[in-house]
Image (cartoon, rainbow, N blue to C red; front, top):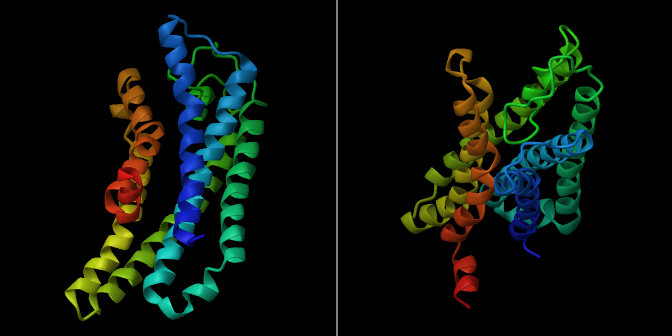
Length: 248
């Protein structure tokens, strides 16, 4: 019933969903020496991947606010982060991911694809699908991607501002033990956010000169598989209560 564990539950579900969207199909293709996916299967993969990834990003933003309230406004924590508020914020994160996924999937698969049907990736990724579109027909989806990027930057700015205020408040704590406890509360979330954002930025903002099929594959694994696989390990290693649960 602790807000942090409520958000961790949601984060775990999103991690499990995102990694289950891409990895099982890729493993099945490798085992059966196949490279095919149906059109509807590709559309479903795009929808669920965008849904889980963007939902996770929104949830990490909510968790940054949770850490901010816990450290900067501890006396108001019970009021600001009550059960109803936590449910509303988690629901908003899930709804944001769902709405974005619906718009992106509908736009991407309404575009005529006239450059073949070979996607140079281990899963159906929107930028790779857009490469198959006819000239100028991808501009609507590109515009939607720009809008999503602006919203993502807003979440990023919120996280940065939250942590600036958190670190400012922590450095004012007189006792070293108090500072260490406060930092320990934030480090797992900060590590998860850093891994999530850094891999995503490298995947989509790397120079075109560095682009190659093999590098694109490695980068896609870094941002689509590594963060959801590593997140449980990060939180388990930094949290005493989770360690005790594992020992039991």
